[in-house]
Image (cartoon, rainbow, N blue to C red):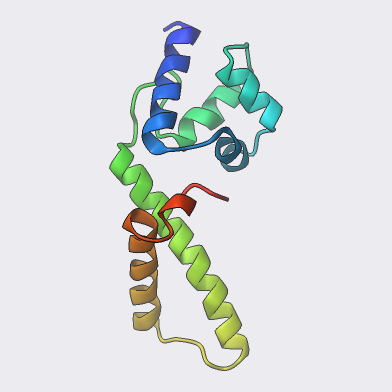
Length: 126
């Protein structure tokens, strides 16, 4: 498959998911310049292609390996766990930690906020 064809598939996926170049840079642990070079069609290392396509649920050829809904759901859960863990760690220090059932409920509620609520715009922020 030609590089430009893969690039077009990646660009399309980027728009479908709602990622910015800055999000991609942070999530893939690549520099902004490297990500910009990739999206402008310049040649990049294979490892760069792998990092960018992996966070988007694609393979090297631009084929879907993870559907968009699963990708969003997974990201929302990761973000929810991170946010709840911050709250839980602070609460535990104050001897007010939550029980496991309450934590799971809080994670689920926060995940829903990332998918459909107030936090939706921050789903891909890192």
